[in-house]
Image 1: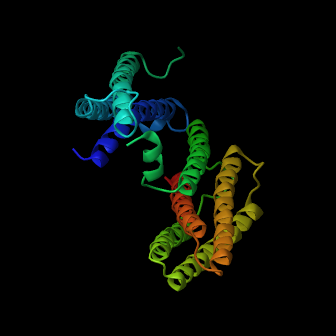
Image 2: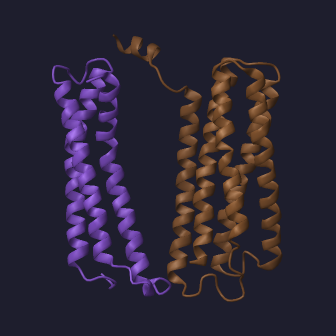
Image 3: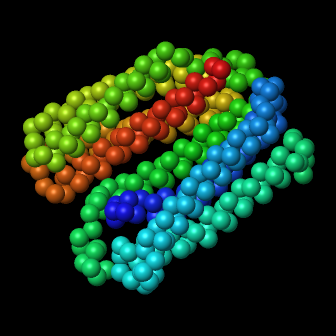
Length: 124
Length: 193
């Protein structure tokens, strides 16, 4: 694999998790605001369906980010984190992304379960 | 390759471009918050816009949006001309972009003043967020015009590495302003839905 492609996969694996979690959080928050407020409550927004669609997109993309991190980690496995860039940087960030993507995946899945199972539009 | 060698040989955009990218990221966060505020207010109000405030116009903002979006082309072509060392072509493309952007800005200021004569920012939350969003967007266009004028003044004395990097950074700024204008215009026009 070329260095350019490895770099792309490394950065995708590193930042996609946080970005997707934040985007899915904002999307869910916006949907709940739209579904539960008087100005837009009559639009008939299918809250659970939208939440599940957002979560499905986020989970698929997070799995892709995890696969990208695994690919970079394997391609640089002969390298130490302290080695000079670009290979040291690639290996270090791929290691970090391997763990962080799993954490973001868990956050997205658990949040989605909670929001879908819980009743919509009531005071917590 | 050592870390120092890598840093020296590192390919990719200049520090000016990265500085502009950081600035654009902060501006994107600012506009995201304002657009989020717009929709939060919109969800809480049954009548949007409220009684007594006219609905936003549809045709003129869409035409103006189309006009400003086209200016990304001459800006990017100017960057390409600059990289190939064609000073005259770079200046012409920049002047062309500047003329269109200035025309857009003049029309938008005219529309903004017309709106102010019909309803005041203090009248309702809708009016407040309407003027805040549009005002912030127009201010960014005004800053872009100043960037263009400054760059043209610099390019009157020819190319330097510094000026070429400034050209790339300013073109990037205009692409960002155009995307912001697209988001702001569609947000404002969503009141007609």
